[in-house]
Amino acid sequence: LVSGLAGVGLVIGGAYDAFMPVWMTGPNVFTAAGVGQDSAMILWILTALSLILRQHNKKEVGSEQSMDVIPPPFRVSSLATVQTSFWAFVILLSQLYILSDAAFEDVSEMINATL
Image (tube, rainbow, N blue to C red):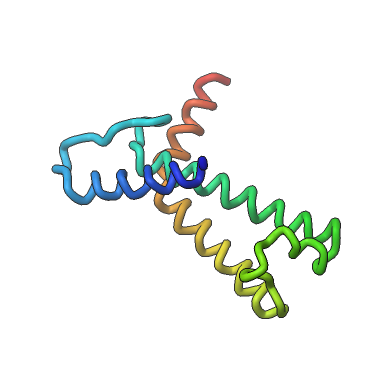
């Protein structure tokens, strides 16, 4: 649910950036960066947690049993597919970080201001 709402926010923020004049600021959700950057930050956090939990489950339970969490059409059958899936996550994380850079900077400034 959260990832779906963040995905919609990313689309709305991208459309706002594409079709609104440059001097107009976008609607802000959590930070002053705008809805698109805030949504990308949320998706980055959710994707990173998903990758960490997936790697943790593989180490803890074993690769064969941990794949039961993934629905049957998407089961990983070979080592090459596992490596491809990992690199797809890495590329997704890097692109989401590029999109959410302003939001991460704003959050770090808020944290530094409170300390």
